[in-house]
Image (cartoon, rainbow over all chains, first blue to last red; front, side, top):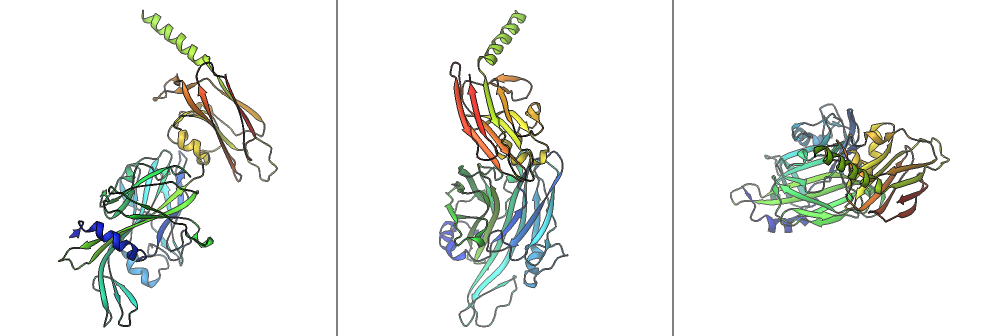
Length: 284
Length: 167
């Protein structure tokens, strides 16, 4: 179904055009590193926003919040998932939507590393041009297109929004790829990031090293209060690996996306997977 | 024969332990700030690759804030819980303090102290104060017989002068 052979070619020429398909998304935890032998809770904010860690729209709801109407269908398919330090997957915390962000609490009982995700499973998205040439897009597999629509592209989009939290000694069971789109892995633990140290990460796609060389973007928090985004851009190698060092401390949003062409008999033209990971970097 | 072996081992290890000594003198300065909380302090040893070797002193009040000594926490605190139990203490008022090390570390199973291999090590001192700042100093030392060394470092705010003697 997914033509991986063409992945390399497709990803190189679609990356530029497809970046911007979706707004940025993130989960921002109050803490990523905790020291306690007791039970501790952390607070979480999630948002759909192009400004890094300045929330704009909510992401996720438990049925009790205020949900913008056009986000309702997406929120219904959104899954809150928690991978615990023992590697066991459980339902994540219930997010509640407010006008500009969603919020949740997470209680950490076990020691080790947790991976928290907001997963949007495959969602049909059709982009087109109106008869007057202006761009349009509709969601859903039976979405109605306006009359005279041209340049119709059928996509399945899927996104994974994550962060990592460690209580006491970090471990790696929750870091193992679970499959389903893009995931972050590699030699460096995501809860052991310090300024000016070499970080070795890697991306997997459906649990396997991502072979399509892909651009990874990292943006430090606080974009609203500076004039340039100052993105760090790194390209993965043929095994999905990439290395970098962080010039400043703070929260960073890592973004990556890939697009694979559907084969000839597939009604879907492209499968699009995006990954958003919040990382916390400490000063020396 | 068995007894002889044990005794000779003890003598040998005692010799290694007493062959060298390091002292760290450091100053917790008086700060004219309100509120003032006594700082958390960690002094520890890392090897040449900056892996944690041994905690020499850990002053704190509650484990929730141990993570604020973030270099110590990542190198020894979070991975070697229990290995620093013997060197913890309450936070202290501003004054000069001295801590010494005889070149030993816990073995892997934390059942006995063993002498470290001769070589290069880092002495680390980290100070973090609630509602205040953080200072972190690191000095490379050579841990070999017959190499006396002296270093003087200066903290920025939370830590005054630091003197390290190896003899």
